[in-house]
Length: 497
Image (cartoon, rainbow, N blue to C red; front, side, top):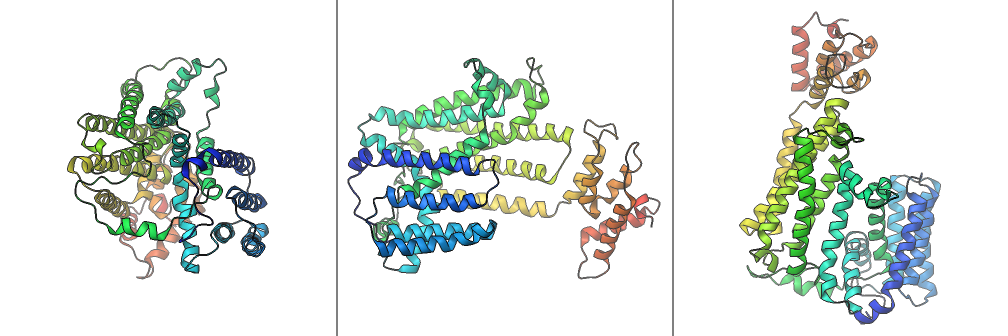
């Protein structure tokens, strides 16, 4: 965007007078979103929320009354909402987003120099850049209120530390129990990770509408055109928030917090020690897999923000070892998450989503190692992105060559209760859904006591394989190998008929 609706007021004065009100409006709108959307079927409520958000954007940004502009923006919004009022689906939701973005752009930025490009720029500022401004604006408000630098310096450690404690409590029943001892009402028993993440997402998405701030193109260009020297520090998006003092305090606190979780995993997950009464081993192994991955991703984001190339923190002889120690604990955390998921799969069998989760965890671990390599080698974030893309591409290419349906079918049959394994009863329906590649496993499963397979479903898989092999257009090497196996085992039940 090239212009703003009105000249920007003094930052300190705006923080004192307007930002607190805007934060209050944002919280009210987040509460409304929680009531309308969380654990609810969404339909007309989406259109209603878009109307309320449009009104809040108009009132919160002190837009001067312009009947013509207001009518045009309202018409654009209504046009975007009509499909959603008829039926809310993916396409109609895109129209809601488009209508709301264009309407707010028309309302708050009335005189763009390049109409189409600058209206498209509204989507970038509202939906891609704007959600990341909330934390920085909170800090700027505190600074404008003449809070001391010490408070800002402790903001990151406390905010991130509280988040990590919450994630650990969600992932580890022991930590949850210890925190519950601090509260007679055991409030942590009502910890809802999904709802907390929902609130964080909604707050960050609402804020750019309530506090509209279009970026001036002429202000961005000079800085973008000037190359950085090798030892030049990349300016932070959050001035004062990630200074060396705040980073040092954060790393000390984070290492201590993670050491508790690491020690518990070493004792109970890796060491198989007896858990306290009331906590089952299955619960301990299963609960932590996904919250701990969220923890590792947050940790990676913190390191990227804090250890900017050429920054004071990246050069500190004290901070760098703490970063390496913390990233090492995060890598161990990811490995523990993979072990937790593996222990869960031993009981509840293998599925495509569980394999995908293991692959994702492996990529997170590789990403953490690459972050350390970037710091040690003094590389840029661009190098980090390229290396992660290479590892992602190589992993996906390898996955494309692996016969996952056959692996899942073989594993589930071999580890089922009927086969004498530690798993639950075999789900024959899931095996059929894996397709023809599950036929060898089905041949073994039909010989197990207590397994009841439907012949017509097996014939359906054979027919699908035959159709694949009937024409060169549908021929595949994997199907050819399977057909060769069936030809070599004519006495198997699946190849009969």
